[in-house]
Length: 77
Image (cartoon, rainbow, N blue to C red; front, top):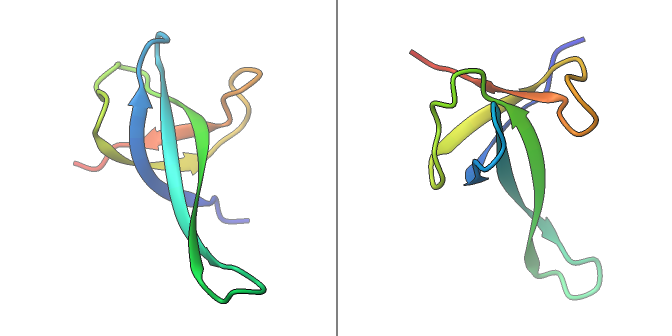
């Protein structure tokens, strides 16, 4: 089964080897038919602490690393 890949913005780097990524999406309101922006935060594993707040990163699903972390940052080189 393929792993999900999402793109978002790093909003916190306070934890060691962890970044918090906010992923935004647009959904249509069922009654008003207007697009509403929704966001969700994911804790992602960043082994070398290379990303900082404001960076746009891609994250993918992985096996659970801790209680909150089941995503990892995809490094594109």
